[in-house]
Image (cartoon, rainbow, N blue to C red; front, side):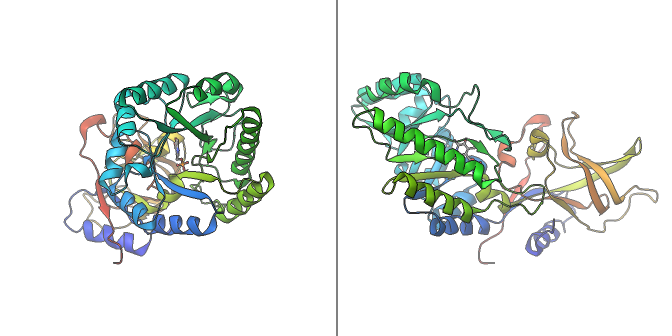
Length: 403
Ligand SMILES: Cc1ncc(COP(=O)(O)O)c(C=O)c1O
């Protein structure tokens, strides 16, 4: 990985004081570009939502708003509050996720968010009850756990026994009951196959299956139209730097062809993307505190570990990384350093699970240098074990746009 010059400059500037450096650096330029690019590229009817679970920092929400994202996919009341504080209106929010509490649903119904994506019959009845009490109605999608699994993905959301949505096989039992709930306005389906998918055809296969399911529902249930079809997120990023990036143009072309084939013009198609929009906007930068050899292998210990950057350990992958050499004074002459070798990177936590990278080839690294992990803008700090061992949180430094 090549560290962009402006990120390295920021690291050098921030480390001048000599204080231990442990920070995320964010530059949301890529998020802005990607939203605008998708809006131009995608077939008519496709709406682009930012899945803020990838990174809920206000700078990301602000960038999504300014780039013209259709709205925000939320997964909790906390996210709803952050999204509205950033300037999105409740009518721009869509809410997916299992286990929505009564308090969360109440806020959504009272504030008239755009759609709630029903994950179970219980949830459907809970929303119906709420709407009766508040004398209102709510637009909903039904989330389906399709009988389809993308194996080559980081996390799968459909296929097999899942906590997400209603099994495709149970549709004919569940849908009539949902349609009978008079306070719910049924608008269509939400089918999210998997996250971190690099193969466009795998995601398009999911789209094709959803379209077929839509046609079946519409022919079987008189008067029912799925005018919104939500494919969730899933566009992958190339963590292993194989050069095999997700190709959004191929996805747009494939989706266009599917829309034409099924005669599905004049519908809304929702993309709720997190990783692909946010990953390239963040670098986790953490100071090397210690280097030692243990049974023939160098152990590089950094200021931050899985408390600040849990993804590599949780998903058993190495993020692309590089070192900013700061040339700090040695503590003693025989102090160890790394040169052209494969090493282990860990944090300061008292668990072997505290791994940042393993067997990663490093050209040169010394104590006091900064290890920089790229593609860390999505699912970085937000999915880490912040309070474990009560270290201070890392800084979150935002590169100001236009500078
Ligand atoms: C319901 C839902 N929508 C969207 C996303 C975003 O997915 P991705 O980051 O793969 O784009 C997720 C991720 O977990 C999700 O659960």
